[in-house]
Figure 1 (tube, helix red, strand yellow):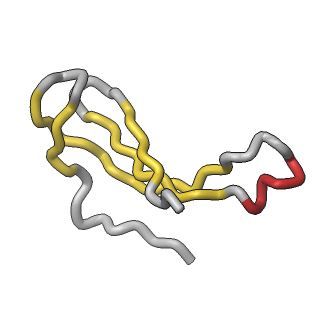
Figure 2 (cartoon, rainbow, N blue to C red):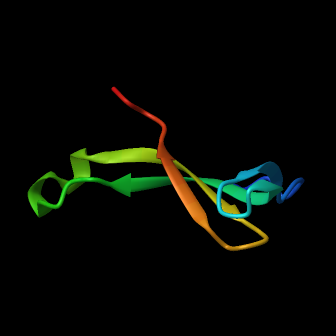
Figure 3 (cartoon, rainbow, N blue to C red):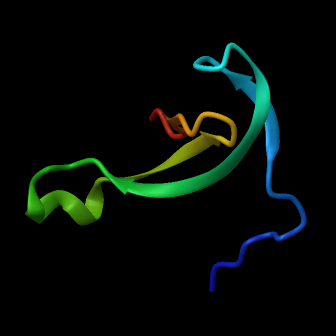
Length: 66
């Protein structure tokens, strides 16, 4: 069972859109990369997702570049 740590909600990071450091909501998502249905279950990868709390811009970065 997955749980979320409710202790901290935001991390301060540089926002390229705001051009300054702002609070960001950061999470990890498992995303399917394959467009083919028969391969979808084998193409899931973790992504770090960061959303600026000031402007709403969201960025993602693949965490496993194997």
